Length: 156
Image (cartoon, rainbow, N blue to C red; front, top):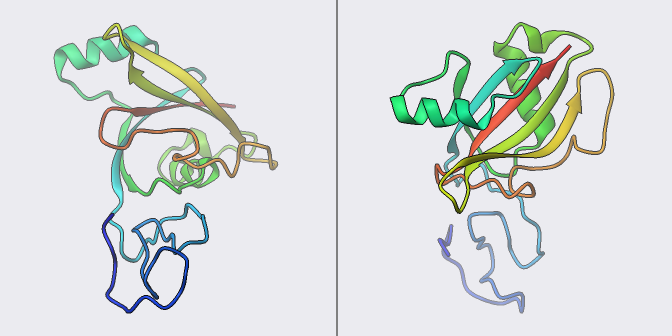
């Protein structure tokens, strides 16, 4: 663990007083990032109108060491929710600003056969709340080490 400040241990929570583990945990069991003290991760997001990219598209991009036309590089934290990502995307993508836009999120990773695969993690609707709105990248098991990519289909 990377401790964020020095203090004496007077509580029986496993952390010295005033200390957190970089996630903001101080014995409470919460999993929120201390955004003031933790650097964000660089996340590669691929945005397509109406559909997700296919695994073969990612294999071709990797083989050419190229960037896709709709690839975004976003610095954010693992406690960022899918609705927060959708809001960020609507600031830079005209299609994502549609009042009826649906954001379909998938994590792209290289599987055990060394092939790209997509795993759907949730949907966010611009015009109403839904069960996936508050899902965080951490809860979706997104690997921010650079191994995973985020694929978003914006459907209007």
